[in-house]
Image (cartoon, rainbow, N blue to C red):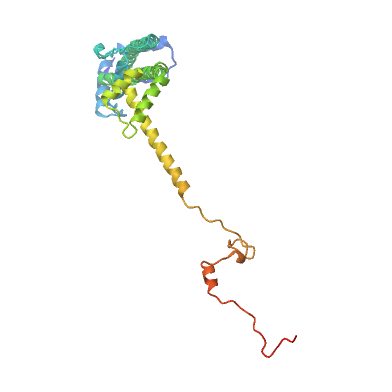
Length: 309
């Protein structure tokens, strides 16, 4: 078998594979014929060299993996007492909580560990399968070791999002549990009537300066059987309500003392829409003083007239 003829036959057999039907027996027989050809390795080496020199379809570079979000999720889980695989167990917070809440947290941790374990198992299987497929194709295509490594990194990069989503779901589950169990204990409880009377009595006694000292707060807390912080919060809210009450009373008093506008009397003798007092009700100022200086009018008598009796 000559050199050129053998190379032409080898290229023809490789090209023929794309037009053949998917028959395992025929394909395996053809692969064996290509492998035993003495020019097979030389042809593969030449094709790989040409591919590296002339990149036909260069792939875009993978973005660097940003682990900032995953680190933040790990910190949130460890702060709630959940041991994340791959993290230092000494950083896990040891917090005393209710038994029901701890049981739910243990369930979240078990589910997360199972998902991460299944992820690593599937990742190893998928990476191995992809590498085997690429190597088998590399016997008949110009595929280098760099291509195999790039494909493995791409698979790992995509699968890394799976474990990040699992951690995100765990954080959301923990947040929901805290809302159910922790917020229920933080519901506001009103003080007893005895405690409210003691606090109001102190406030009224120091109405000019309702700011108790630390010693007074401790004494009030002891008498009311509450904490010093609760005493401080009560006085802060009481001062705010008292100031609002004073401002409201001042506003109401100012409205009552304001001069009331004079009512407008409609004038039936004027055009409609022009309020004005009627003429017969108009009395100018100082009119009585003016009238006393005006001489009284007497009708004149006729001269030369006499009254005969």
